[in-house]
Amino acid sequence: MAVGLGLSIGTVNTVSVLAEEGSAKAPPGRRKKQRAQPITRRTTLTFDSTGVARVGMIPRHGRAVTEFADLTQRSSTWARVGNRALAPADLVATVAKCLIDEVVRDHPECGTGLGIAVAYPARYADEQVDALRAALDGVELTQVALVAEPVAAAAWLEADRGPLMPGLTLVYDLGGAGLDVTLVRVGAGCPRNPIVGVPLRSTEFGGRAFGALIAEHAGPGLSSVSESVADTIAGELRARHVRESLEVVYRCLRVADVTMADVDRVLVVGGAARPAEVAEVLAAELARPVIAGADPERTTADGAAIIGRRTAVAAEVVAEQRRVRRRRTRRRAATRALMLSRRTRRRLGRVVVVTSMSAVFGFGTSLLAAGDGVLVS
Image 1 (cartoon, rainbow, N blue to C red):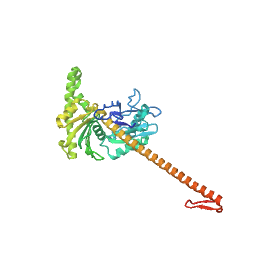
Image 2 (image 1 turned 45 degrees about the vertical axis):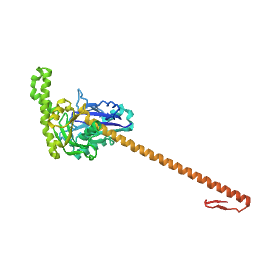
Image 3 (image 1 turned 90 degrees about the horizontal axis):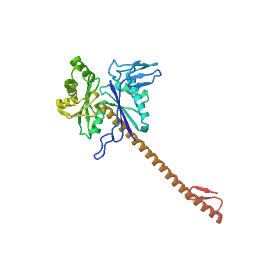
Image 4 (image 1 turned 90 degrees about the vertical axis):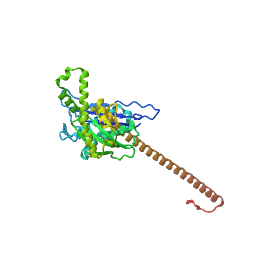
């Protein structure tokens, strides 16, 4: 059975999801299989004295390696383990290796039918993607596919809400460390690279920026008000935060030379997009259908898992075609061998007849069976 594993390694959190058969949208009249629970960890690494890595741990004593997942940042963390210096791409590959080994250990039934995809930010330049690819290959993850995060999110959208008419989807990814806005083509006939224009990112919005906004505007008096008043204040600040982020959305549209009227829908993903105010403000301000999964933080990992499963299914199809060709080759070889054995028996029968006639009538000591190419003495 083909199974997909999707990994979304963010600056703050890392999400891993399994996609099994039936975990996508079910056909009419059939019950949808319950989705596997995602595993969410802090994007941190610790190394013991032997160099073994662990993901998501914050040790009481010692040091955890953090702030390495964004390869575009010059200040991204390096780590030294023994005599090795690990670059940020190596640390990301280490996180992927740890989580994949954990899944293989906990789900041995996956076997060779496991397709794996790791999502990366669409804003990465070729050099960053190449560095991540080399780092994955260096930890023996050559079979792992790399997919841009908005493309993975669009794959989830196609599987969950499809089939979709050809058009444009704006992926609004509000994560812990920033906001990424990308235009993606979906539906039949979309190109191999469905990203339109240039993906844009801003660290002025997201979970950390909103936390700073709360601290700045609420002050110490927030603890003295009731919980409902505090929630109201936070909701109003969040709505304002999202409205201000629309500047990034409109800039992304201008770069792609399109308008909001050309966009068919807005797909909201990211851990900081869980509150209902995010989708509500976007729907009201952009006047387009807004789609958000039950857990927006897992949407990108879900899409990567779907892509991984498609890869595994394609590999199974190729393997089955090879098995069919081998069976046909063996059958043809057996048929040829059978035909040759029948022909040989007929020829031997003719030789026996000729030999008998020679013995009875004394035709001589050497006879050639005509047409058989056999000389009998």
